[in-house]
Image 1 (cartoon, rainbow, N blue to C red):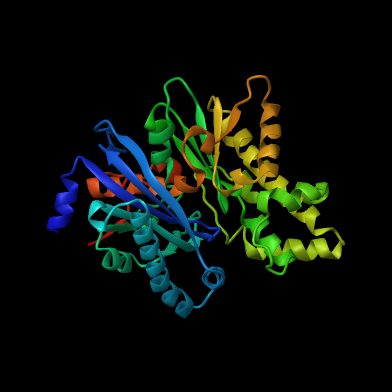
Image 2 (cartoon, rainbow, N blue to C red):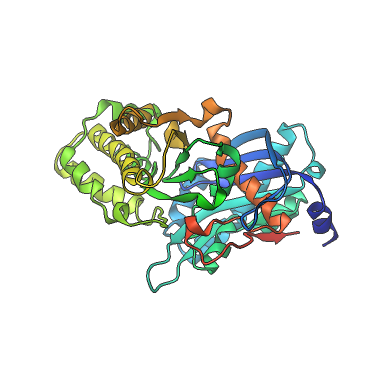
Length: 399
């Protein structure tokens, strides 16, 4: 407890964020220097400065990646064993990141670990939701000797929220600008967006639908897992969009549901991708045609979310793309063309890397900010984004 109080009393902290997304390619790690603190209740408490000191990604080996994929629909034993195994992997990533940055464990005040999402059940009308992230925090704390904050999503869900998206506070801190409307559009396994406004209380965020999840799973199925994603959009660039299938996909009920809302691989994942691959094979379509169609669908579903829920209420000057999908030139090209439909005053579509924040560091950086708020005792969820009944302090602390 003494150590916790010592970290609490610091006006500036060095935080190491850890994140493994729904694409489960590896562990993103970011070391961040944070001065000051924020609070959802009462707004800014002190001027906060966020400086990214170092970041890297530590890929899972093929066997671990395969086991994570299996755990999405695995047995209790699978998940139990993997929880501790991933705890070791996250600890290794943290220690390697610290060493590569030229630092020592004693230089890090907090580790903030999102973990690996295994299953996510959004709350439905009359039914409570649930979520499960693994990567045992006690193992991370023990191996590194660093105070560790984990399991950020559960507390929000305990007060009726979706437990997602949780990064809007970080997006506001990083991107809000007086007189300018910005949307941070993440395209990870699932696509989510944050409408960043001048006032924190006006910020909204939600999962727009699939990101890379359907594309990745279809690529694996079509190539016999020789390929795990469409690198640089190569398959999509060679294919022809199936307009009939695109029309069917864009009418998915999730896209029409109003925020707050969240989704995951349970809806837009392997099961759906396999059905689409089987149907495509029956029609004797080229593999590239399905990937082109799914890439276009992902872009269309993102644009559709703006038409329905963003543009009617907010002025948007700039859309900032982040996540793995921002590395896919076909996806980015589709999005730029779609947003030009808005007219002469259409928002610009920018890549986050061009704005000085590496895409591969963004999510880990965001959870570093959230971990800092946890130790400060500040609520960090935005009820307007998650649907929670109130703002709460997120995460669990392992000393």
